[in-house]
Length: 177
Image (cartoon, rainbow, N blue to C red; front, top):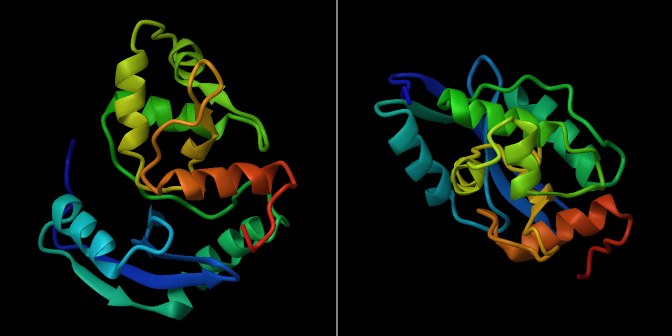
């Protein structure tokens, strides 16, 4: 996997009702959506590993289109995203992330469903690893992946965030959960 160096990543803190997480983008598009209620260090550590030598610049105005679409989603007023993305991964990771984007809003697939969808039915564990490396939570909807038996499984943003996102998409979420 190729890392970018010496890029500028623009960031802001998205806060909407009880949601709060950092997001970042390059000139090309959204590159990172952080975990709920996590410190800035989560973002800065990710940038240090994935974009060595790059600069993090807070720019609320440049990030406004991303904040707008994510906020619309979090308010239940958006089911898909029109903002550009800029993420890098291996060909396998990219195939998995593309498959995640094909899971319909409000539905869930299992890891084996994803593996079958990308025509790699024996690669269930590798699918799980690729999902765990997804840098753009919510917009590349890895929260829609559950265990084969229907149980919630790991999520970089934490199971509480995953639960809230799934409840939101089913119309069951209230801000005091």
